[in-house]
Structures are given as C-alpha cells and as structure tokens.
Image (cartoon, rainbow, N blue to C red; front, side, top):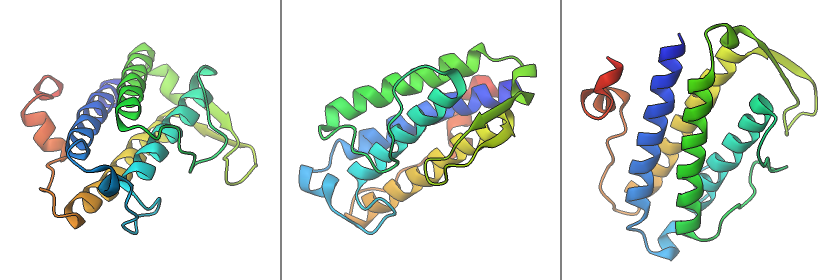
Length: 169
C-alpha cells in the first residue's frame, strides 16, 4: 500500500506541474477571472490547494506553516505560487517516502477548519483524501482553462503511468 501512496505523491507533482504549465500561458486577468468554480478563479483555486496541503502536512508532521482559512490567498504572484507549489510537492513526496506501511494505520487526530470538532481517523484513508482533493480541484482548474478557450489538459493517472510514471507499474 505504501508504494501506492508514493505513486500518488509522484503523480500529484506531475499533474500539478502540467496545470501550472498551462496557467503560465494565461494573462493576469484570465488567471484571476471568476469562472464560477468553487473558489472562483484559477488563481484562488490553486491557492486553495496549496493552503489545504499545508494544513494537512502540518496535521501529519507537526511542521510547517498552516493557514487558518481554506480560501486564503497565500500568493498573489504566479511565479511565487508556482515555486511554493513545487516546494510543497517535494515536501509531500519526501514525507510519503519516509512512511512505513505501519504508519498508514496510525490514527491521525485533527480538528477541521470548517468544523472545530476532534476527528480521529487512520492515516491511510486520510492520505487518500488529500490526493483525491488535489484531483478534484485540478479538474476545476482544467474547466476554467477550457472555458477560457485554452487547450484541454491530459491529467489522467494512466497517461502519467504510460510516460514519466512508468516506474510505478
């Protein structure tokens, strides 16, 4: 099971890089345009993903910055946000690579930002949520890009596995 999560961490890095590559071609106005996604714009959605990952990694590791809000704008500047995303993806990969199979069963205790109640769950399913959450919101950014008339992105896991992620097969 650990190898599965290592693959997802690598896939997550790859997919995020593709989304950022596509967003790099947007004008600032397009990047910030509210296109009706849950967080409105590509800029705000990508900030949300970075904020959520920081929150989860702080819960998992006890280290790092964790914003107090899910809709915080951590970075106004695209280049700064991209550099932070790349660093966070590296941090996720390094942390997942430090885990053991036994770690996946350990109980994680946390309080959701949206509901200040203590929650206790095994790490494995929570980590699955983290990667699924990334996929969900990357899909929203994909929709924003296509609504702006930009080319469609190929973000499928199987596409990753047929190319750069071949080592995971």
